[in-house]
Length: 110
Length: 115
Image (cartoon, rainbow over all chains, first blue to last red):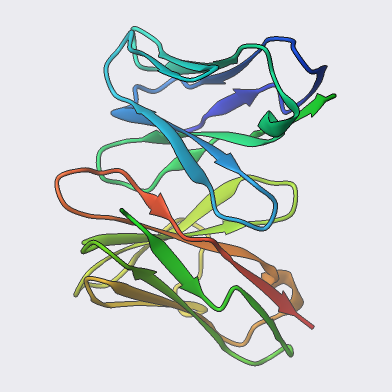
């Protein structure tokens, strides 16, 4: 069983602060996805990283894939209340089903 | 593009009855569909993988006779929860992938409540 450790599980910060969410595994991923999920809805794909060392930016969100393709991070700059939600990382091994981390519940207080 | 729908969005049923959930890829052909379950305050757990025209592959601990999966076409997969019990109450989410990319696109989920 492939395990994906995601931290922190809960994070509450003030508007304007920066934050980083981490996703780690002892196994190598073929790709890693980051999702955001609102209550009562399915996850929405934010980004897919495939290449070791890859960095992708989505407005104030920066996603990084570790050189060894075992870890990833999501960094949010100048967080806003609209960023509040559940962030999930998910590792893929080929075309198999995804293994999700436990998620990070993020609250941005105005 | 890459829209996945689920029906129904919510269902409430009595214990012992069976419930069918549909997952459709609306604008692409999904060679593979996945079914996940999510309990409150928890992450998604993969239940099974289904490829069009073949039997589903179930994850360890998931009863194949209880969670019947059919993937009869490239745009439709169904999950039937048979003889549902209160402990089956959960949020069931499907995803679909197809074409050259392995990217999975998720449906909006189905909230099942068994009384």
